[in-house]
Image (cartoon, rainbow, N blue to C red; front, top):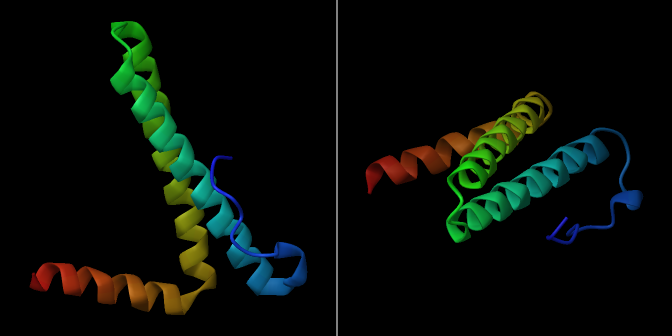
Length: 91
């Protein structure tokens, strides 16, 4: 993983631990998306570019899986995402 885990996970318990595990999974998947898209932008090989972009799309699906479960466990996260969406729409 390119990013560092931002907290000491071993100090957490229960739902707090589960929420952080999900967030760490999201970080890892987003790192992978960035990596594959950057590599795709660098190559001139069309097959390699297509493969890398396909893998990046799969990683985005994984982000969605982590996020879906996180939203089940963290209702505050749901509220804050909606708040952020409204703020963007107001721009």
